[in-house]
Amino acid sequence: MSDSNKTEFTNPSTFILLGIAGLEAAHGWISIPFCVLYIVVILGNVAILFIVKKEQSFHEPMYYFLCMLAITDLALSTATVPKTLSIFWFNFREIDFGSCFTQMYLVHCFLVIESGMFTAMAFDRYVAIFRIGLAVVLRGFIIILPIPIMGSRWPYCKGNIVPHTYCKQFSVVSLACADTRPTSYYSLCVTYLVPSVDGFLIAVSYTQILRAIFRLPTNDARFKTFGTCGTHLCALSALYIPDLFLSLMLRIGSNLSLPVVILMANVKLLVPPLLHPIIYGAE
Image (cartoon, rainbow, N blue to C red; front, top):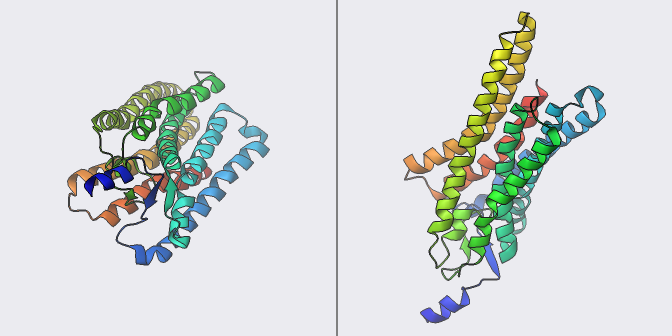
């Protein structure tokens, strides 16, 4: 019997996403804030793209990077939310094997690209915009590529039930009957190395910016430049703080229930695309 079960799930054609496991009865109510937040994300980021295109004074490197950030935010939220809503509304829980790993890849990829965009925005006065923009995108695609490649080649004999709203790497990998340490170590390195490198480069850039600010002749010019830097730092906080908070809670709060963990993981992906248009729109 055990051999039969193992053979059945060695290469599952589909995974089953449970949504928010333990709160299935409340999926209808939970879908309301998810839907509202997703609509706000779409409207806010599309508005940024429209305004930058129409306003000639915004045709500068900083605003081109802002448009690239808006596109990345739209892609990041669209990679997960529509499937999540289909689970909540229509109980469409199945996702085929290839689509699951594609979704996993896109989520990680767009997070890395987004981090790179902030680094690019900090250096936009020093490098060619199109070259660094292309480099940021290629970096995201290449760095994350080993994760789904390794994961998709493992045998999956522990079932095909994923207790999440999307194909989160840890939830899927835990179903594999193989030594998953290589991808776990690689994922851990990416998780901590990418923000560390980007943070170091941003710090170097801001050191140069602060030196330039203190050389400005008037207080008005200094306050204006400080305002731009403050906006950038707020946007950075929207990206990194939810991720840091979730990581700390998972390590400190060992008794966190599964529904809380799933909700926090979804909020982490929705917060940056939601806040970035608000932050930059208020500048």
